[in-house]
Image 1 (cartoon, helix red, strand yellow):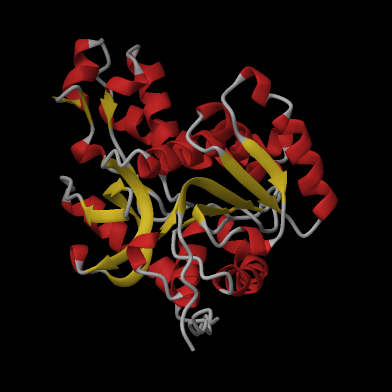
Image 2 (cartoon, one colour; image 1 turned 60 degrees about the vertical axis):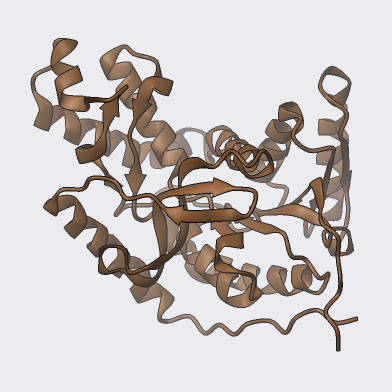
Length: 328
């Protein structure tokens, strides 16, 4: 039977999951003006309706955008479907502790999406994002470059913010990445970090900071523990990731070909294969174009390999089979 021939609407997005992260992300997307239509889907239909109503009341002070609650039948022509649905991370719970609960949820969502003939880009935001991006790639049957995880885009923003505070310089002038797992084994790529082309340690000395090892450890630890500290205080994180989601969508819709540390499948980089983790990549209208090599020292490469092993051990225990393509 023939596959559904669905024409993609480049100005339409869908959000699956209307909890804190999903709703905050839709709010950020509404303000960005990059979409003219956003459909919200949630297992609790009333929740989706309430969030759509609330967010749409701000459109009068933004740009025209139709925001409404819908069903999976409404997502076939979306250019981007964002999946934030999943169990929340609790205090003292790691992102990897969420695996079993959220893999099960993903197995229920992806088939419903693919039944609609969807052939746009899937953006996975739910945690553990690296594992769930792997699951979505395997289940959906979409091209790998069309299934993207938000990865360490947020961690990298946290990294730049910490460096900005430490150095007293605009975060947008800082070029640095967190790579690997979006979680406890993430790596701060200090070897490639720079401020407008000046190596970060050299710039630190320009600003009167000389205890590099101590500062690097403290900054990396604060970045890694940010989510735990926020969850301990307010039970969830959502504003930062909402801005990360907005940025990824902007890059795709505007075909910016920007470099972002998103989650996707590794194919031989640093000897890593068949594992999804975050690494800088060029992102545009067709999703991920290519990995961007950055300078890493021996210790950073070793940590990246260890991070991949942590993820691969979990991936290898999952039983996944592609979903048959939608038919007429």
